[in-house]
Image (spheres, helix red, strand yellow):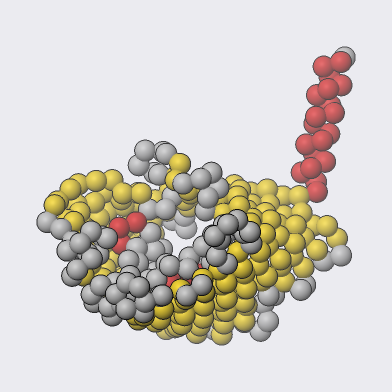
Length: 313
């Protein structure tokens, strides 16, 4: 009888919690087999493409208020190892309502989602074909407080800042806005950290089966390396035909900031949607940059021919 009473108490607690809130498990496994060439050295390898698993939940507190949380962990689809810290991709808690939402914790900057991520269609800006030219100097996930506006006739915005009083800590400010009007989608992102800053503008337009988009980003540094600023430009196109998607993506940057010389990057890809959650795909990507090298190694260019499978759950 004692064991039954304990079980009943635990069950009542669990069912009570379930009645108050909802928790969902989601994620992605995305792996490619690639023939890579880095500075003349050829290798065949399995490549992880930002695989992740996450938990998100929401509790309706009444009066139009909700508590939302997201815990998201990155892992490798190649060997199963965790990427960075547990829930390093996102660990956030927010109070949301008609006023928008106030969020605390760790999440991807809105300025990135409003610009670079939005136009990288072929593999969602992951893996060996990810954007190597976007300025990530002010990209900060952790220790933030932010405000998210409600959707106002197609416009939504985000403003966040880091909260860290440790010795030598430098605040980062991040602002972004998105506007969706039918087939047209616009985005603006700005972030600043001391003398480092970046400003990006994105546009994307859907014309039936054809989607075209791009962004331009101006990066300003402290001027201590390779000059004080540079400009990055990226264009992308996608044509859909049934379950097939055909992709083109090209990026270019002037020299300056962390780039010692001009650089370019191009990708051609094909995706076949086996279902709403699973796709098979292939791509060829190449990047050329003298001096520092597209891979971060001096004088080293890069290319990869890849085939892969991505499954969302």
